[in-house]
Length: 597
Image (tube, rainbow, N blue to C red):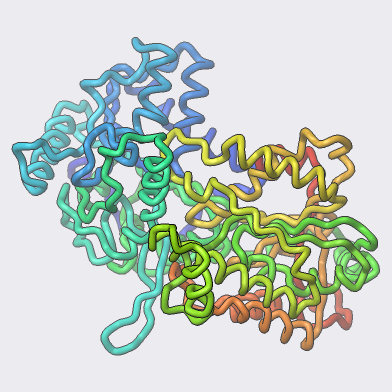
């Protein structure tokens, strides 16, 4: 039996190969994996390691660079590094090529610290298509290069593969049935045969849609003169990728997965039989694969009840006090930061309404316009476009269309919050520029103009309380809106007096097992009806242009999770609460900045 055969065993359903990290210990996740990589190379200086790209591994590369700088005995110079994949059609120095990504986050910083100990150029390999080759020929050449390196390796195998994992998405079959697919590893999409080696991939519409915002950002920055206009802004249609057979022949595999949207993938990959609709599920057949994930990604595989076994003995008493309406703030200045123009009503409609009855001065800040998520067939868009078109006749048609989409989202937000009793004068459409700068390696999406504008806004409103999005989304708008606050708030005078409440809501509310840090808002059927009406007032999002793995409409998701939280609250307290609940987690200034800056 050779090494690759030894690595393949009967699928295991044990979760002993899964490490779950709480939200406040995510740095530990990347530190742990960085230590694993370094230990492999310390034990075997010429180790053969396969590396990923994407948003999740960025923090891993930063942890590796930090350890490399701090510890002189870390030496990567003899190790062989191969990347999993690369786009077809992007030159090496294209800002969205994976070569550029690796040079920006890993190879470049290491060589700046110490060229002798850093990975040597001849040992750093990415699949690419030479001018004289076809993509198919280039795939075969990269496969041959990999096999040659394996043959020269002492263990005659790949020592370590590090993987990210793609999200899930609903797909309608020819019979009209909605199924869930996803969980790609490298560019091995659902349906990729297990025997596949390095190959040419035709990217799915879903994959191209998911990465399209990066190319839109590049287009915007070229327009601003920050990049040369020779770079293509067309989303590639093909990529080169190592196959599942290559990956499964490694001696050890590490998988990184974070955020709520990965939860169904993790559950399908670990708890269900292997399924071609989820390539990550084929990792079950490997005897030495380890999953490093955060708590939101682990939601569907963990026994949630074990958390309540560790809860305070007087949990019921604490929850009862936390869920009383009299615990809500009164006569305060409150800022609700909504990443998109519908997150406020999706996540905290009932709370907003109750806070208004407590005579609080509430302002909602919509961080980005949300215009990219509007179809030209949308009813509100078609109502506002003629007005925008008439008002801005000198602008190019593309800009008039974008302005109309932006205006449509503003109209929807105004209509939605009016249902809850909030005056339109209390809505702030911030239009953050980071929306046009996301996803480019080495580019800080948060620029001085956004930071200064937010600083001015915070000074003007002088909030006592800030509600913020405490979860990320695949395209980064949620996390960046929170980061924008965290990077500006600490410089405010008397900022220590501000209370921060994080809301979740894309897929789940906060669990109730850590009651001391929670604010719980219980609400009734009439309030739920208004919440649903407010969510549905965002008509452009009733059939979202960027659907997630969850096929339920936003109002249904909100209804289900709020009902589940209300049910859990009643079960734990044995008290008569309203049937629904929105849950928030409290942070001090120091906690907020430390976790989200």
